[in-house]
Image (cartoon, rainbow, N blue to C red):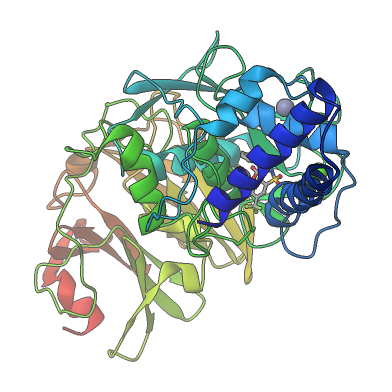
Length: 487
Ligand code: TQI
Ligand code: CA
Ligand code: ZN
Ligand code: ZN
């Protein structure tokens, strides 16, 4: 509603300008009316192109009227002349004035949209303030938020010209919308179309992060992609397209209702789930993706529960499953699930494997082709490629990991194979990988998680846990996985 009002007023503004230049002989009364409209329009233009588009507490820019006009034209997918040409006037006439509308999202005039369901994107220039893999993750998750709501599939390209070219730029960068250094404008995106259309630029003088400090890349990217897909700003304060920065947790992120309505009004609803899992990025179909299981409820004690990863950390045993982690004091049996995000980086939901080296206090968490490291209580945001451990480039994920105190080595499980990594030499041991069921008699060929507790190795495989005795070189007991979290 508010934006309708703005656009309507802008129309007056446009008409007044056109009149005053093309027909200078006006009635005095009409002249006053024109100035009134002009001030009103200016006020609204200021509001629309400054206050609302600036994150709270940011400096106000001092764009001239024509700069604002150019900005507006650019984002409306028009030639950015800064002048009130007929195309601009035409475009501004498009929105209906005074038509009541319950939805609060907006389109661009003319409703530009992508005509094909497969939209390509390419990250052309990265930022130095984040690890590349984290940029990939943030961008992929931001696109995923939209592809979950509408029948759009985003295909990543690593070369050539994509529909949505993503880049980090500073100051002048060739599209006549120079960035302004720290704060002020954070990013911009062009409405769907040829050439610059869909392209999304981020100001590389901002501090981009994966977390809550600086500007969260996922949050800003998700908003910008809304523009790149054809949405303008919404007046619904709970929407992603509302022009105020508010950190959004990328894990488990669901597009707010207003944005879902907005994107579906352009592209219709999504019928089947997105084609490929978007995380980890570029994961080849070497291992079949995990079956989409019904939503997991951690408060119900499932006797057939399995875990994604298990590790000892300090005096605690940690059990990971999807978005949840159970902390168990080695002695106590009563444990309650917590959100992973309450104690770990949000992106560590659905971890594949985890292990801890008590001597150094370092813990490692694996997810897809990346791992994160923590030292003490400090979680290092940076993710690293798992190839650091010496895995072949065709290994894109590990299933389980466990550090063995006695030997100072870490065992990694990948499919039906196991690897042994020497923590001191920081090298894979010779002769590996080996077949898991040949190396550890009695263990299923595929394990989900592994942990060493009180000198014994425990292998988690589905709903069962196998206790392995190194001396006996055999399984000595089998328990239910669920009993480990006291149910
Ligand atoms: N950039 C503006 C934005 O994306 C650019 C812009 C102004 C714009 N008016 C527009 C884009 C109209 C399309 C249509 O909104 S920004 C936020 C906020 C910005 C602002 O740098 O000010 C976000 C970028 F305000 F919502 F937090 C991202 Cl999330
Ligand atoms: Ca800036
Ligand atoms: Zn740009
Ligand atoms: Zn915006």
